[in-house]
Image (cartoon, rainbow, N blue to C red; front, top):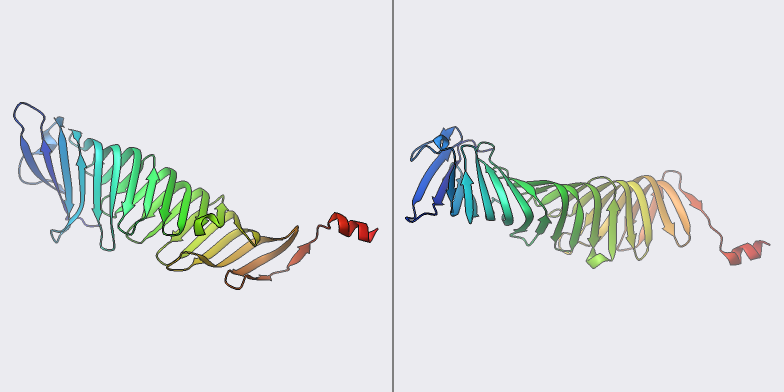
Length: 281
């Protein structure tokens, strides 16, 4: 975390005479210009706030159509924000939000939309944005769409710099335009740059070849197309083969060859058809 970054605020007051005031805030307090911490509250009609790194490079920018300023927080409406990272940038939009000047946290509310420079789209009702780490966090439901991957779930930590994210529960992932659907009751950790995903708790994979259920599944995706290349399932593995099920402790599924390798006491659970029952009689 950068401790010597600066925040610059430009506010325009709504009065008969428009007043432009500039502040420079350091982490340890206010330096230069007017002493903003001494103000109890100020209303402005437009607001722009930028954060700069120790090298003087702008790392983020926050704009709002109107704002209420107190000693510790800035309440904003009609927010547009930009984050400038080393690996990629992203833009945020929200109807309202609060900037915590001490904690460097920005809470966005009333419908949040984000788009990264690689085209990933994020939508949720509200989230917290850490301007130092460029990370987004929300306890709410979130929809994340990137090339070849559509994901929904609840409780997200999104790391645009690492091109990865995690979800806590109620996860649904659709690959290949919905041809492959993966769900789980537990968490998902997905690195879409490397093409690696880990699903936990009652994981279920559905595709045209059948269904796989397990306690944990690691999925390898093609780096470019994001199609599933391999799935490694462990713990209470069950594979549906037609009307029958095969159980095991571990399974490896290769999508290109459609080959399934099961280890750890594999067992076939056979459900005879009506014709098979007649033959037995």
